[in-house]
Length: 415
Image (cartoon, rainbow, N blue to C red; front, side, top):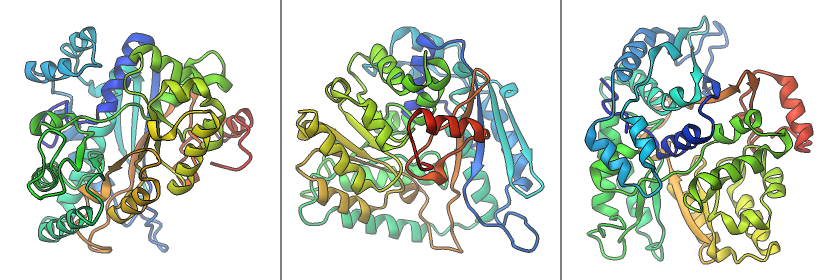
């Protein structure tokens, strides 16, 4: 059984779920799975990393996931988080995922289709554990003898890079749950990072590296290892507001205002790439610049994004040094160091590293992480989508709606 706790997910699933409970309890949604790995045999047209043969094993793991409920200690931990409200904890005490809302189907190409459809409140917690299940099932079937020694050496190299000259203030966070090699490897990585880099609660053993692990997005490991749980909102939240808000053009504004209504200044990091950077900045006016603590980058050139954010704050008479820039798109340690050196002292900085931290056990073709996602595609029967600064990340089954979205938000180029 891969997932043994409903806390084994990212914090932002709970923070969004609380908003859904309080503001959108009747919303109906649809999510779909996609594997972005483009490996297809040119002769047969079959996916070279076929998931279809693993369907029954994936289904069994999802069935086990749906048998879980929150334990008293887990509910008490959630209750201890300052932004989690008591009625939400009471709701979670009654909550279980329902297998009727999810189907896993093999495709002729050798890939799989995963469809999640039902009430948003009762389906939102599927995404992260299901992706973790697909990853672990795939790798335990294709790498029965994983090269853990290589993984440990690579992790040590990353730690040594982070301990470089003038980097003691550089902090990273673990965002790697959804694409981890396995749950056991994920925990090992975190334990090593805690011991070698230290946390805000527990300084590192090596001089000059105290507190370089800011925390983890994984709530279970945050509770288990005494780490800070990190996260605010994901793309699905802003996408759903396309169907839930009063007017499509104002959906981004509506999403941010609804978030502020729920959290009253807490969890103040805005996601910037649902409609692309230009559309984000048009809506992120002086009010939001002052109201939110910062913004998160998740697609496009991070250096260009950072410079535009700093310029935007300055134009709105807000000191960028009081705001936080969070980088979280396909980061590696060398890229993090480059970004840190460019923006250090100009803003508060945070770096969320995912796949390269929890699924880096070798080079292709011996080891290639799955680039898999589950994205919301419909809300209340209406198509929803994101138009990010990386067009390959867009995911919508209705081209007419995408064209309309570009027109409404004045996006002249895809993404």
